[in-house]
Length: 562
Image (tube, rainbow, N blue to C red; front, side, top):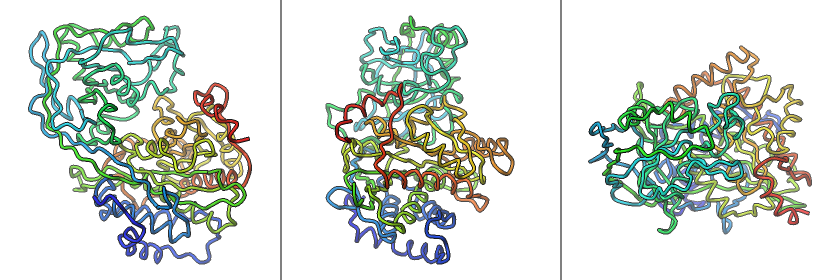
């Protein structure tokens, strides 16, 4: 794609869309400070339309998305907040896609065990090689693959894993631990830590020098089904890295539970028993004797220039201090036709609705007196590929992390109607959850704790890129727990989550529907807006709570904020 999107070019791309949008959403009688569900729906319908081709990074869909967003921010009256006064921050990405494997099989004492992509195994690569090649690599089971000295846990025990294929279990060692087991409570019980995330496991495998890493899939432990694992179709992205910074992993991915069971059985091992052994701190890596892995997979790879879109309302009295609202603009692009023949995985809810939310927050805040602090609105690229856009910004910030007051992220909102509650994700992390409770009370709502903390949602959205740098964060996400809906209660809220995650998450059916009920989404956007507006017009600094793994990071820069 064109690596430079100037405001003029972007506006030319988006003008017909924005003109149609404004004509459809003119509400002269609307209160200036109200979040407008019709404007949000109009934005979602536009961004999730076929014109935007699923909003994949590095495609014409990105060009149209970036153009639309810049034009919308301009029409609201915001100023650019990117480097050198631009609307965008360039994010260089490596884009890879695996082709049909020439070889993909395990060898074992019981003979060859070919594996079928999407049925038995899912793989991708983030190395810029023409072929992903692995020749007779030994296979080693490393339990949960955790190296956590502060918790007295090391699954590797010094084993040399260079050139080997490592197999992991998903989630934390205490995920399935019963009362009294050694692992119980070591990693927050059912609340996932970063050690349980697939991203950590691949990172650790590379640090250990492995040539490939495979995670045994389990729906409960992962928080999503096999259909979600396979949805990228062999495609992957990474930030462009220098040769000395590339991962050692030629391939990374997942094994289905059935394939993993058969693989271990071929070496005379019982995966269930080994999984139980992995819940002990004295667990040691287990080599699958006589088992090796061979792969020869053609790789299409290219470098593409993607973009974060950054807009701002400059502050007045404390303009060097920044309150940031964020959402990701990317979705999954083009895929195989679904039952209705739809080929674009357009991400209407993930995260078109988040983008619509921050656009309307921007509109409302721009209609008010200028804030004391600078307010930044960020639309991130490549969240679906590993939080890459926000990670690139956090590593190359336009505004210093030390003076970033908070990051407020919206990523998926429930569209089943008004709710009696709102869900806090990552309870006990920082004081923004106290602000959430305060504002929710003014809405007649209570705060509930995420019902499935084992899914690790706190580590799965763009706010995490800021948390890792010590910035206090809040994530608003409708998948964190069944909303107590005013119409139908928790049962109806759970039905919405089950339908969305079971059928539409990262699939073509994540599309706008006339059945959407926007009242709950508006409640959540108004809550986020109110917290951000309060921070933007005060001298308050949210704090990490004692016990948070991020508190020490923020404490190091306390003097800057005095």
